[in-house]
Amino acid sequence: MQLSTKHLIGIKELSKEDIILILQTANNFKEVLQRPVKKVPSLRDVTIVNLFYENSTRTRISFELAEKRLGADTINFSASSSSAAKGETLLDTVNNILSMKVDMVVMRHAASGAAHFLAQHLPNTAIVNAGDGTNEHPTQALLDAFSIQEKLGSLAGKKIVLVGDIMHSRVALSNIYLLKKMDAEVMVAGPPTLIPKYIEEALGVKVEYNLQKALEWCDVANVLRIQLERQKKVLFSTLREYNLSYGVTKKMLESVGKEIVIMHPGPMNRGVEIDSDVADGKNSIILNQVENGVAVRMAVLYLLAERVKVDDLK
Ligand code: CP
Image 1 (spheres, protein in one colour):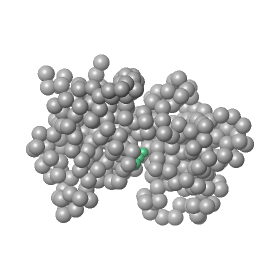
Image 2 (image 1 turned 60 degrees about the horizontal axis):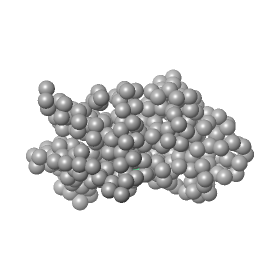
Image 3 (image 1 turned 120 degrees about the vertical axis):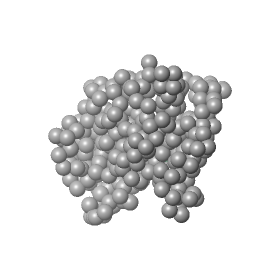
Image 4 (image 1 turned 45 degrees about the horizontal axis):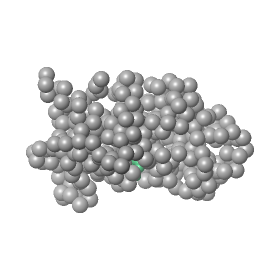
């Protein structure tokens, strides 16, 4: 089996079969990561550059760890300490790096469409999107799906609510594409100012402005960060008021009266979209998500490298 695509730009471009293949392969790599020797030589002789034009903790470390566990050579690039700060274009930077015989590019960028742009200009290099603006964060959605599947056994028929700043969230869009392809039921919940108009018709999700009702409906609540850095105008009164209406709190979960799996992609604003006793509570799988990120990213890198090998033989 191989992926239908040679890049991972977004979940939108993946088939259901691609998603199943990635999740199954991640399961195999998760088993490798439980062994005393957590390394396999699958990407020996493959060189990968991690290009981060935007801050990251989890995604960056997780990709680097995944690459090392697969035996790849890695290079880390941070825009703030590079010649990008002197005005070099994205394409010039990447072409210069590729001239040093780099095989794959993992990139996070603040501009929506940046990964697609690279894939168009560099069709022979595997490009992996590690988050582009407000567009997609495909490996986050894959690790979220892996974590739900691990906890609940399957995705089909499960009710998942994405809570909070849907408008600015690439995690939300990638999750919606993935969960719908895998036959889960998806709802978005939050204030009307943070939910795009017509999302119900455009993406086939339910919309709920009352958090309590959303939590009563769901099996899983994936709580999203309020992205103040992307909000160009005032979209709610104060963080305190946001917490009172849309913060996932222990009191609210107790009033719902059933067990709900709690997720968050990180970084968390504790006391804003999620309270500490929920984030650290018994139904939280937030750190499992982070752990699973390594196996999922190993799967993505391995499968893309296999796809490149097949293409080279043609
Ligand atoms: N979830 C996520 O993308 O976290 P980072 O921004 O720390 O990579």
